Length: 377
Ligand SMILES: Cc1ncc(COP(=O)(O)O)c(C=O)c1O
View 1: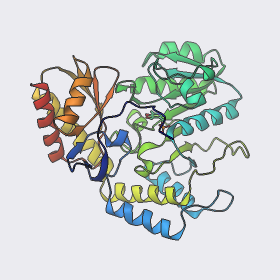
View 2: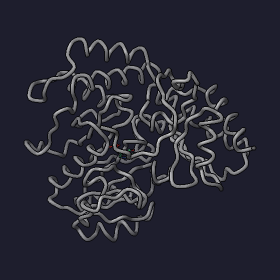
View 3: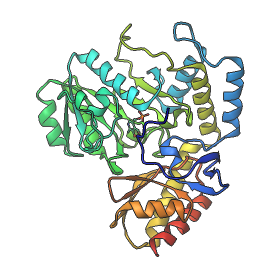
View 4: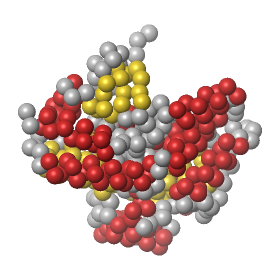
């Protein structure tokens, strides 16, 4: 059997990592401003993470969700304290799309409706409902287009009000900083207005924090910059630093729905040990604060260099978009192949920076030099 081709791959094999660096099979060192697609939160191969995951695997890797798993409870308690939602509830699954799928299901159980409002250029994943809530011509699944979702413009509260007032909207799903959509940011005024409308019309407000959350924006959640509390929050990516895990954070107003939600692997012992180790390191090394400080330093540095082709630098914390007046593709590829530095991208002209949250100011200086070399030649 051979692999089914789903990605255009770089001709590079990464075999080891340490902090914000990775090495390929030729022994070449790369600076990682991509974090394996915003997944590596505490850095590659963190010794505490290795110790805790190994220890758990030696004891028990997996047992089913039909018996008590104290690690899940500990994770719920720790996470509630860290993010400030102590009295919320946690449902653990395996990925981001699955988290959104379950959040949308929960919303529909809550108010009995099926209509969803989503942002233009949204990306929420590739499973049934998640792909429908995604507005990207490259990411479709014709079988799933059931007409549940209306896409509306960013920060245009009047357009959202018009729809919500109809009284049939189940949920609004929002990425406070759109990742795939191009580091487009929701305004505080918009989200606060949306919160009021959702309250008035019994509509559920879901924040997809899969990419912008878990410390990346410089607060634990990106919506916390905007002084709004959603009803449901979805997370994945950085939660377990590469061990597959997703979660829905559920506000107290939701009652349990027995028999409707479930998963074989979700919240297994190994995943929980990985997630707990991530929280240990985030607290010990103050990575949320580091994301805020080093992110600001990174944005200021790129701006102050006044590099050719850079028309805008925007973002929050370590979720940054560098807008170019040329296609990102050649720049990103030269960064990889000539400068040995990984970055991400959005749309056609945005370089997307999603480094591990342990990035240092020295790493930033290093990156800026590499970026300057590419853009100046
Ligand atoms: C905002 C957002 N939501 C959902 C997803 C889907 O997550 P997953 O690939 O883990 O299913 C992603 C993945 O990139 C994402 O960025």
